[in-house]
Amino acid sequence: MLARLLENAAMKTAPLLSPVIFTLCCFGLWQNARAVNPPPDGGYPNFTTAEGTNALQNLTSGAGNTGLGWHSFFTDSTGNYNTGVGAGTLLFNNADSNTAIGTAALLFNTGPNNTAVGATALLNNTEGGVKHRCRRG
Image 1 (tube, rainbow, N blue to C red):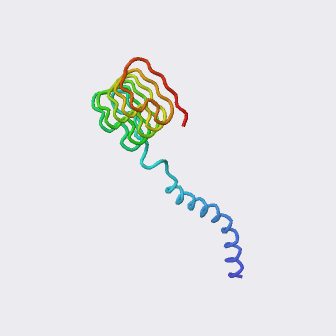
Image 2 (cartoon, helix red, strand yellow):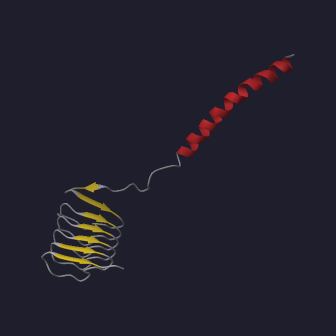
Image 3 (cartoon, helix red, strand yellow):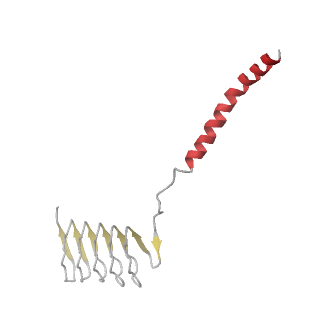
């Protein structure tokens, strides 16, 4: 009789243990499901955003810059209102109001108010004024 009682009790608790075990396993796995590591850097002082290895690494007083990509704006220290998307965009820039999209676009730029779209577009630009150049890779 006692054996039958224990058997019935075990059968009644087994369905209750399954959801509990499942939930505990999920919480154990949940610890490994994390966001991007390291977390995105996001906003910096002076309305500046940088994401990518050494993006805007040497910025000191420039404001309103966005550098996305490996070494984007690496040597820029004082440029303002620039946007670079792609590896090495505006790498040696210190001018203002430039937009570079594409690997090495405006790489050696020293002039303000330029827009370059495409890999190596306006690579060696030294002129200011409004210059627009697109290059397909």
